[in-house]
Length: 383
Image (cartoon, rainbow, N blue to C red):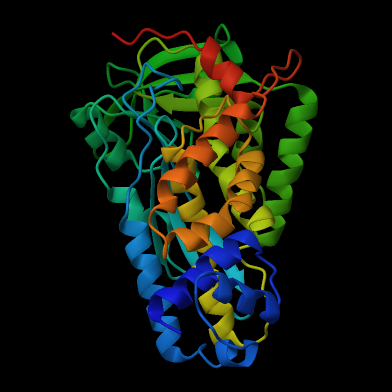
């Protein structure tokens, strides 16, 4: 068993069979050219192996692979970046994974940290963005200082409004936002200044939500307040009647802002795919070292799958992410052989691309359009 063979066994074997038994893992080792028994493979899960897989994951997260396809998703922007964090808990262990995903050309940037690390402190958050790019993040990444820096750098951003944020009119007059929402013509779109010590310029876009949606949102807020062992403030309950966004994109309507905000959900779907389909947190063992090695390997596996999709021409309107993962898995045996038979790489990429192209494209929906339909219909001219 070599280091390369060990990594390929766990990473590629875990990608193909995320719930593999010990014997199936041994069979994966055989496919990458390692002659070893299940017991022999079991003995390789040592602290040294754990350090090796940890460094493999770190090296993998530093790699950036992007598609060379034409920008078809929201082409008004020079990149659409989604940032979020997810908890990875297995056994009594865990870590936080921070991910920044550019959905036009697909590149992923990621970092790992302790579970107790605040989202704002994850390494991926402070990585620079290109001029003309759009950043979308949830309230965990709401930071006025960063928004002000992006204003100066020519980076576009959109975020939900954080209750408690102080808002002023452009002339510096304090604004009672709730009072304005009750009396203004809706949907609302106005220029504002935000913050106390260091005010930044922005646009506030808002509209009321239906009564049934308000009841559901209020129930979620009350449940969260109960878990946090605090009362739900009347002010927070009042704001729950509205969907409010802050952005630096000029002349943005509420419908346009809402579509962009919905785009952020794609990264949640990515996390769901990794956890529910790639099963990065599922393990058949109670051994903590083996558990952790397998988590690192499966994370590397989904990265490899993502890279393969990008270099074989996959895009959002062509094929669902789950179907694409199934196609990748069907080619893992060939991928395993390619490391020891380099002439197979060309065949692998050719056949992957052909299989992707042969699949039927996603069907359009009339009542509940898919994300790629909404992106295609998005009409915005940025001055």
